[in-house]
Image (tube, rainbow, N blue to C red; front, side):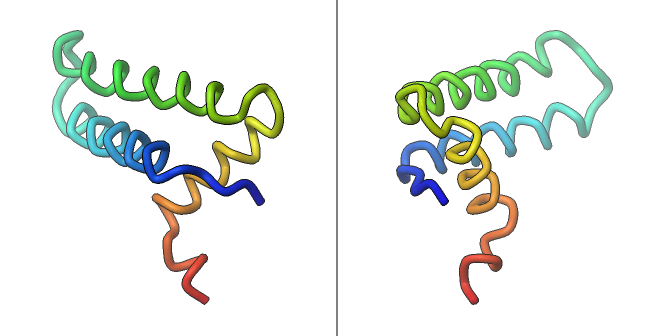
Amino acid sequence: MANPSDELIQLYRVAVEAQTKATAEPYTEEGWAPWLAAAEAFQRAVTEEAGGEGRAKLEQAVKKAVLWPEADAG
């Protein structure tokens, strides 16, 4: 599996936190803007880091590291 950078993992954490905050309230364009910006920055960084190869695997590795960190502990 791909080995994502710490920067990529941090970008995804920011996106997840922004999503949690955005979806906790009724929708407003202003309320969702930080989430959309964070998600876009993450996707751009995945594309750059993957260099066109293994993008899906890299994104999957980041999501696993952030959302299910205990899976790598064992």
